[in-house]
Image (tube, rainbow, N blue to C red; front, side):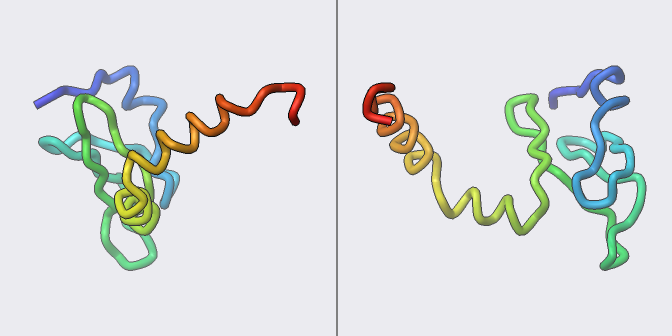
Amino acid sequence: MPKISPELLSVLRCPVTGSSLVQEGEELVAAVAGEAGVKPRYAIEDGIPLLLPPDLLAAAAAAGSDQHDSDRQGAAAVSPQAV
């Protein structure tokens, strides 16, 4: 289980509530509950906190990483003169 450094935790904020975050196992948890009365939780993958609100995290997962890679390749293929 990767441990997030205290220095990093001191600057990270929940994107939903704006509150500080604490690490609980392999997740970061907001110190304050959101509008639904539940404290937002964020996964830590490969030592990197995924600080996307739940609705955006689902959309990002549905898009898939291959879509983002093809966008970068397409952008790189356009020459500066063509823009």
